[in-house]
Length: 455
Image 1: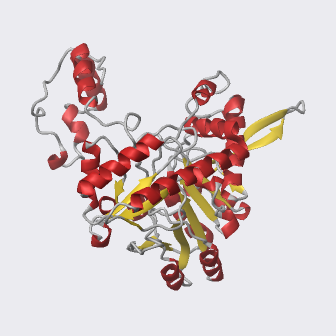
Image 2 (image 1 turned 120 degrees about the vertical axis):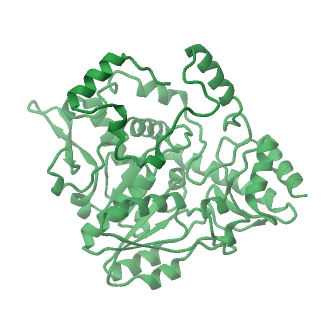
Image 3 (image 1 turned 90 degrees about the vertical axis):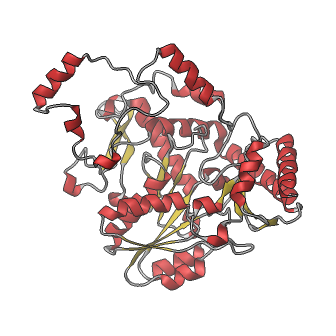
């Protein structure tokens, strides 16, 4: 809640200093139709702090939270177990530095962990270099498209229909202010390979194409071999950008770098960061070494000091806070440092063997649930090759079914009709995600509830 320390006399003095007649004058650029015309109906203008806390707690108590019921929602935000040790380690004094390292060499603990983070991301994605994180996966994808234009000096980006609809929405919003032309495809619920439009993408590549953007696993959960797409893009002088929204999948699925990707972006929330719908999130960004000068964000490096001791520095920072705006590759003003730290700590605790084991558990559990749900009359398992997320086609519209499941105490998935409004083919589609946190009792509850709702 807001705490307002200023008296009316303080406000009047501040307005007089800047030459504004009243507070409303500060919002002159906001259209009248978008302004609040008066008190909000049903809410008092003020109330005692303890009463407000009690009322807000009662309202929050009406929510069906992910940690209290069987939970199978995914589509870009995943419920994984984060060890308590992660939270303990990120609060150590070595990492309790300023919000962002404006004098980076002072914050050696932060720089070292960001250096380790970059190494981990590069190895995960199969790329040669990674930066010290971005805001989130969606803005990282947009930065990749803009970077591809700088590298190729072309302006047309081709986006697969299997890319998360929210990521595409962010891309369309931000590229309104750039010279990039974005060509999107309508996703299809093809049985066995939903959202796989590789043939269409290859046919669309021409000499004006800067990049092709594809997600793997895609929004339907389908896992594809992207090698033919990479070869077609490279033959035309274009770049392949691969998006990964479920980073745990890289413990089992062949890395994008091994399949020929030029830039890999993704969402790192699944590792070290608890489920928060909307953030804070963690953007991953990796590319080929030859493109490093066009990479947005910052890059931490290892060196030695005057005494020959190992140290870490901010090697490259191409953001406009550090260099001239016209030379900057991005207006991203900071990185998700705390989330990157949590990611790196969790990844270090897991190790390569632990990550592969975690990925194997996720996949095995997803296969078990998919087989059980597919036996329900009228339910079709659309995705045949998946990691821990798959699409079901229901005999009725999915959105009301998901609501009824919630009424029965099961958060059962994401409606494709809601993600892609206006695409009639997807209204019966439901994306289900399974992680290591799901129990056999959760499976029983989901199967029984879905069977009852569809009966």
